[in-house]
Length: 156
Length: 189
Image 1: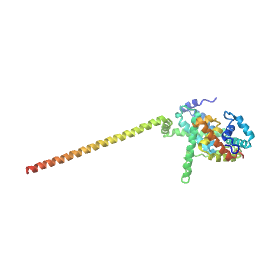
Image 2: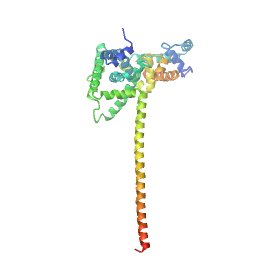
Image 3: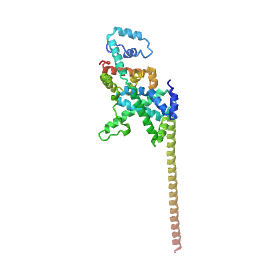
Image 4: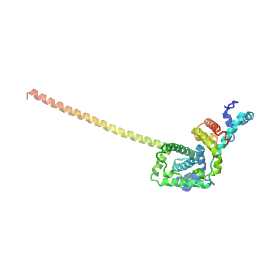
């Protein structure tokens, strides 16, 4: 809202930017500004600030822009000679193509999961083997006890 | 006669250095001024705009032509600008311990020296006030204000580039203009 008269700031902005936008109902805003010194001052202030900003644009002489281009090309050439450039290019390509990057990530995760699953299965097999060996050892002991009991019964 | 962007890009994809030169020549002033319009710093604008074109050439294969080349270039420019700001912050933190800038990144001249000194001096105060005002804006407010008043885009074009609604663009523009006016005093010298 504009401070004193209550005219909305957004409408003043429409007027300020009407030169670059398809303006509608500008006549109504203009009529208000003609009769309201506060809004007229504000609109002039906005326009002045915008003008000051747009005038900071920089333009060097063509020689300077040439220097910048040469520097960029030199850096690109250097990057292309770099042995890591190919790796960088693949990296950029993958991350430039989101779907491909996502697919590769899924494949990598599936690989990690498959590796983990194989390890767990091998561990489970080992555990079962150890349990079976323990049972066999216990059976041997029991059989020996039975043998000695039989001998005792026979009075040997 | 200027060639179409897509033709130039096709040649860059084939490795043509002449096409690279052509593309840079076509857009370097716009890119420089977009960055300058975000930070009002000659050196930052110079370094970032160089980085932008290096990144564009490096990632040219990822440009498939779904959007205009300018939109692609704009996104690369803003990403490079925000990356630069992040790196600068880190550099300033470790500046007392070591010089973290690579030899190749160092500029051997001041960009300011290449300007028309009188003209630069005349606008110096206004630029300082604008810089101060920009520092008080959010990134998106700065982008909207720059796209409107430096690039001359329409509200609906800005909303398409930034992927936000027209109403949001208007709201950011209104707030940014108000803040710039209040700090620059409406542009009065």
